Image 1 (cartoon, rainbow, N blue to C red):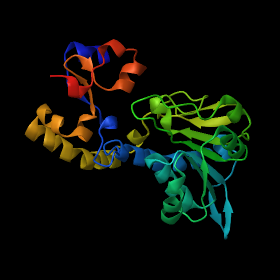
Image 2: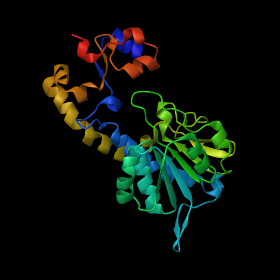
Image 3: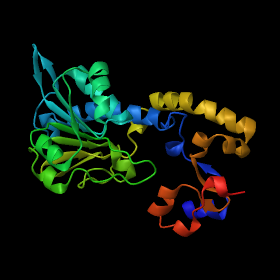
Image 4: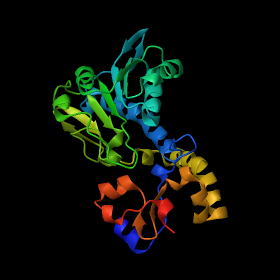
Length: 269
């Protein structure tokens, strides 16, 4: 597909690399939010014993909290998943690389959550007794790193569930591979993996409304100013992935071994 875009000298703007003035990803955020909300509900479903789960209900029953949810990543996916998990009840652990976010997460989501720095030993320790693990790692425009190794999965309890939301960018769990809505799960080391690489497609109405609300202002700007208007908006211009026969997003060029065809958008006529 990329070769064809280059051949046709197509100007391709990628939702997942458009930035706003604050450096965030406004067109990726709606789908990340939907997937984050889904991650805990899908994981809870597959924890049921009839679905080959360990039979642990995530939630508060008669004042007692049950179930442990570990979320790896504190971005949009991680925060949405955390809100759902906190609302259901149970124990909540979030791994991230930004300790300064802990206070806001505890204020906005739950004062009882634990925030831990994302390091292999800490992740391995928390996964051993986790009921649900949500992989919510994102590297902008690049493949997600495997922060959960196969050895970590092997040490998890039988019937536990992993929802790897990062699978659409390669997955952050070493044992993940993409699945579909018609065949969403598989087991490795007796741990259920839910790895659908188009999670928001399960809720197309919500997804379309959320994505359209975020996208429409950018469509209006392109319609009014054309591609030339991008040159005056550095954040919006970061969304350009191909232009004039070149790849203009360096991580994409590296991932596809197209370094010779890479040129920064700002340097192209």
